[in-house]
Amino acid sequence: MAAGLLTSALCLLTSGCFRHEAPANVTIINGNEPESLDPHIVTGVSEMRLTKALFDGLTKLDPTNATPVPALAASWEISPDGRVYTFHLRTNAVWSTGEPITTEDVLWSWFRALSPATAGDYAGQLFYIKGAQDWYEGRLKDSDQVGIHALDARTLRVELNSPLAFFLELCSFPTLAIVPKQTIEKYGDRWLHARPLPTSGAFTLGAWRVNDKVRFLRNSRYWDAANTASEIIDVLPVGSPNTALNLYETGVADVVWDKDLVPTELMDVLIKRPDFHSFTYLGTYFYRFNVTKPPFNDPRVRRAFALATDKPRIINKLTKGAEIPATNFVPAGVANYTGAAGLPFDPDAARRELAAAGFPGGKGFPRVSYTFFSAAGGAKLHPKVGVELQQMWHDVLGVDVELRQIERKVFYSSQSRLDYDISTSSWIGDYNDANTFLDLFTSTSGNNRTGWKNARYDELVHRANNEVDSKKRAEIFCQAETILIAEEPPIVPLYFYAGFNYFDPNKIGGIWQNILDEHPMQFIYKKPVFKQ
Image 1 (cartoon, rainbow, N blue to C red):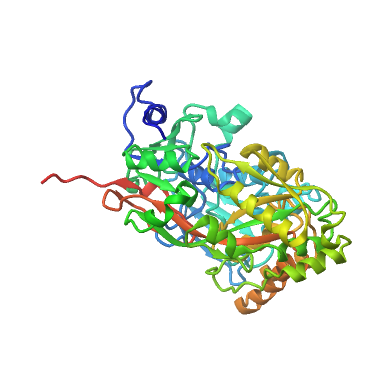
Image 2: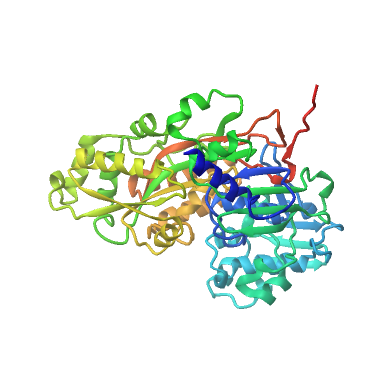
């Protein structure tokens, strides 16, 4: 970046050229501009980081190891059969505006997240609750028959369809966060503009200035406010790796999340520095097919494309990090699970599959496109992956695939509408369990976005989540994953992410690396500088 452009960028992002305001204790670069701060509708990791600072759930994830710990619920009991949870809310749990947080707030929030009118892609996270899916799909009209009941102002009883190994983790997820009923009912879709905005988390919303920053202010009424380490945290939306690195090197930013914000051409050098951190991470980069129309409604065509994909080539040429070629969809490191075997790179088998589908040597194959989104500031990984895939498919299959780049928000909307042929995708585990990956492609999942429905797959995922024996559960999940990535693949895994961020541990504290890349802002702080 030229010096003049860098100066302009610093002036804009810090807002110091235009406003007089207190400096932040910590400044974090978090990727693209957030699409929303509503925890019940966000889908991206970058947005979820922000909503977790504002809105608590009954539990939250421990920053050291990403396991569930008490949040708005101080404690709970689980019935002997594992189906009933009784939560006890904290007596000092209040909104940032001072009103008590009660079980009625929990009930209202969860039913809002579950409502089709909210249009949240993660509504299915609540389907594990008795009657919730029937209520969502209109088969059940009486909400009292859904297994969520306030026994009193501080006691909540939740009845599940079956024992669930990860329910406490779900209670920390943004979809199950507690949001302010009165404010949302008063302001509707503009409720996040209310001032003061009642929040249930460690911070209040000081400001959200589009393409500038989100400012978080310490919530003095938060139940755990004594352990909130910073008074002010600014989060900057920066999509360009070069800009992010420049802002970090010049001291404007203290922390940069994600490997996408590291210039690929400098990765080999930067990864050796003590302030650049790589760690095991539950995330998979993949591409998905729209299976609702030809030619990808034919599993043979989908298998042909999968078999024609050389995954190590993408890592060796493009990512240059610690990524691992994905032979399956569920990453290594997920608790109590070993992934199924997927389709290898096999050009001869790929050509046989395509010929069996009626396109020998690619003859007569229709023109299709590979869609990816453009990142603010020009991050280049997605188009580079597209170019490599385009070349592989041409060389192995004899087919021509167009590359289609669209704006990020439009991209996700197009995916949901199935307005694509093949599209880039990624998934980061929401909790440490195989279900967070395999549940995605059940017929009712809002994040499926392929049009693929397989009754056998749905039944296997359902059976696995009813199984209490962890070994048998893993075996059932493995059968489901085999259907997903080998028999009828609506997706093709490319590689497993390596977690990555950069900050100077001599200057910044309160960040611990963990398998879910969970770093609550509540604990992040700048260390004092001692002059000699």
